[in-house]
Each structure stands twice: as C-alpha cells, then as structure tokens.
Image (tube, rainbow, N blue to C red):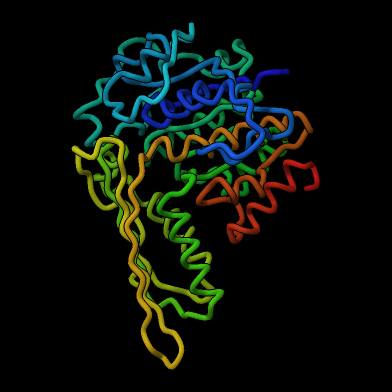
Length: 357
C-alpha cells in the first residue's frame, strides 16, 4: 500500500501528539471501534500509512536534530504515550516572520543559521501533504508556508486560525494548481468548541432561545502562553466565536457570546480546562441555564482529527480534486469556507470519503 508522505511546520506539542499517534496506532488491525480514532481507514489508507518525511521549526534545540529528539525538546510538555524512534529526518530551519510573540520570546531561542529552501525540501522529500502547526497569530508565516505548498505541489492542512481555506483567493489558487486545501483552525475530537456547538444545536433544536453564552479556556502549554498576547488572539477568538454562533438561528453580539482563550496556568502543562455557560429562554419566557466543565489533554485531543484530515487530503490528491475540501474542512476545522451543523458536516465528510461528493 502506498504511503502518505507528510511534512510538518512547527514541531511543538501538536506535532508531537500527531507523530506519537501514528506510531501508537500503526499496527492496529481491529475492524471495530478503537478509542481515539474516528476512521480506522479512509479509502484504502490506515493510520500507519502516514509517513513523515520533512519538518520545519525555528527553535534552537529542535532545528538540526532528528525529528524524534525535536519532538521531546522544550517547551513541549504534552504526555508521552508512545515511543518515537529515530526517524532520519532532520528538522530544517524555517523563516521566523511573525511566528514568535512577546511571551514566546522568553522561552524560545531562535536557531542560528540560514533559512532552508522549504519548497525545494518538500519536492526533494516527495512530500504530498504539508501540515501547519504554527503558533496562533502567525499571519505572515502561515501565508508564506501556503505559498511553499503551492510551489512544491503539496496539499495544505492549516491547523491554526489564520484564514487560508476561508479566503476565496487562496481557495482559487489551490484550485488552479489542483491541490487540496483543508482549513482553518483544527477542532479537537471532543473539545471545547465542538461541545459548545452541540449544546447550542441542542438548545436551538429543542426550541430554547439562546440569550447569552461564554466559553472560557485555559491551559499550561506554550499555545496558551503565546495567547497571553492579546494582539495575536484576534483571529483565534473570531474563529472560536464564529464556530459557535454559526449554530444559532438568531444573531448574538460579541457582548452576548464570549468565546476564547482566557489564561495560562503553567502547572496544567498540556492539559486544558474549559468552562461553558449558556443562558436561554424556554417555555413561558422562563430561564434555562446550563454550565459545563471539560478537562482534556489539549494536543492529543486534536491529533486524531489531523490524521483524518491528512488522509482526506491524500484521497483528494489521488482523485485529482483541487481547492478547498468543503466537507472535511467543515468537519475537522472551526473556520471552514462554509459552516454546517456537525451532523451535516459529518455526513458531507463521509460522502467525500465514499467518493459520492
């Protein structure tokens, strides 16, 4: 069976969980449900068919080292649930641009040396899918890596809240090159945003008017530390807010719907805690309020979703489909080109996998 050749941008916690996840599930032969995996196979591709061929970062301690060593290097602090052996993949130096914010500069020392010719490395390694795990707020860097994907002929999976797939001009450029695009801003498997969306849909479908809602997230990884810089948070907050309010059939102002990262608590490491509250009006104009707390390991919680996104991108490459993949983007991402309910997004993704859409 052919492999799916994947390159990584950003060798942080999320990349660590993704690579560990591929190793953890590599030899799974089950035919029934397996915890943590939504699809044992997508088309003919199983989890173990993913092969990492290149990686890019800017941090001293990661650049120039084998990928397995870089994944364990600080500031990574996610759980180590699988052994990643030496890969023979040297992490290459990417450009910095706006990839390091004020708070990350306190902990991330830039690697010396020249910036790699990323497009050339992607072509040389035969990379088919480029996965971006850049820090939140990396607007310029994200667009630069999207350009490299176009130049090298790679599908692009944009896991962060910089709007590439949501942007009509980028969608058209990927369509013209016949390259698949999945984005933007990955949802976790069962994370704060999807739980909030499901609750919002439940209220709407059962005739309860949502009047106000909040979602407060905090954690202890470098992503939350980076988001202490409020200027870098604008796209993330917009992405998370729109993902929720898109499920409500009447408009809520930003004062009435507050969704976004709230604080950094170092001792939580890669765990994330979320508090959700929805206040609504029900029969007889009486109040109905719901509160929920969710605790997860943040990075592993999205790894299975990205594994599916990679395999859907490869299916599109095999089928000669370019441009944004609307079904997979709506199911896997918070800010896709078009928002659907999660039920419809799942149905559209399953139809895409079957080749029916």
